[in-house]
Image 1 (cartoon, each protein chain N blue to C red):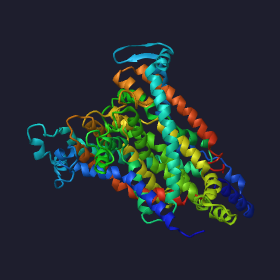
Image 2 (cartoon, rainbow over the protein chains, first blue to last red):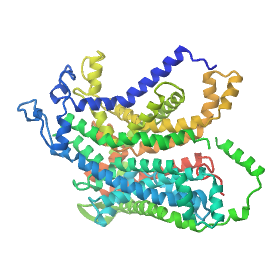
Image 3 (cartoon, rainbow over the protein chains, first blue to last red):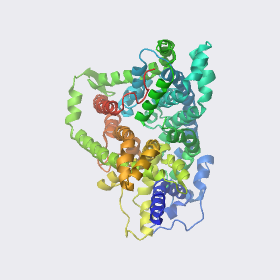
Image 4 (cartoon, rainbow over the protein chains, first blue to last red):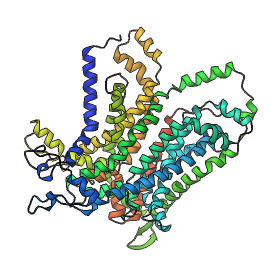
Length: 296
Length: 316
């Protein structure tokens, strides 16, 4: 039964290739689009690879130096907007908000998860389900109330508003992951410490957390990514350059008629770098744990 | 998987004497204290906004006029509005097409990734990328792929000689809808595949061996061993993705802007434009409540579909 026929291999590699093209193809196209001069991009029939790669778009985003192609006169002049230069600062905003949210969520999440995994108290099941299911209400349904709350607190266009809301939006997921992981640690260790008189907090800090590093890293990074990518509420709450996050800036320049495609592609490449860097650790610590440890 | 675990636990507890059950059962009030910050925060940011939406939905509310109570008139207005009906129909169609295709593809990809082949690890790790990048970026990336004049797809197809002239992917209603479904699948397939792969790997090997001994074909084993084994996860994934599809916003916002016309205006986008373009907060809130209620029904279905004790395990 275990014999691998040639046909079987062809099917497997063919499917894997199709999948790889579907998943990674668009990224390759964006990378290509970001280094092709605008004039070659929009000609019919296409001549994408007629000229050597052009890095002016990247240079402009970081230094503000307007590339030669944008200074030409006449119909072939490309459009340019100062807004794309917001990208680095928007990334910084997203990053600050996401890191802060990550730490708050890990602290509150591990406290709650320890209780859910180890302690018996009234309302354990009810509050657990409530926390998990709260996330299933579509964000757009709560967007206006969120806006009203943030406005009445005077926190519009601040990172604080984003941090508060993202904490609530990502906490349920962290609680789920950490609770499941904490439960997988043999409770005998925990009970031995309790017999010695350790409080739940001491147990959490000295025993459970050191044993749960993979899930903490995984849940933390996952939280980071969710907060880093959130769009709808950030769009509502941050208008000014001071607090605007990366997804909002990307959304805005994509509808800005003065932004050329090359610049837009370069912005997306730069904006995706943190995500690309985080994909491997998230995979390593979380997904692999999920796919191999699911039998427990 | 569930049955096996409980069975094992049962035999364990039979083998070893239960360690002082009275103390295990003791209520630990410090638990309440530990969960309080998380639960209070989540309640405050869920219940209050929902109450706020309920209240607003009964008001004639807009920054342009004085607010006043209008009862259920907002609900009547939005539910009978032809735009609402169109958006609801589009959303239903989108969900009915995208989710089944997504789940079927997810099963296929999970089965594929469960096979050993060169590049498997790379594919598993890299596939997170489409899911992890901001959805607004995904919309823009695919806008570039689908662009009318010299988008990547048009250029590729033209270079390969498949088409003679560029196709207007995003400005033809049917094609634009198809594009939204494709991009939705692009962003969601990674998560679905991974969850199903996890379920697939939890199916005990001896079941496959037993089926093989009984002479089951590859398809027979898939049909009678794999599918029943991953059914709980299939249910969870399907319902979860229905919720995600109902809540899809960033994607249409940055890919099509709801157009051409209203061809890809989903309910979420409709709420958005009703609230922030037309500044009719009362209508927006009424729509939001309707969407939330639909989601609550879906949540209820999830709860019924989940095996008892699936999340917290037996009460210890």
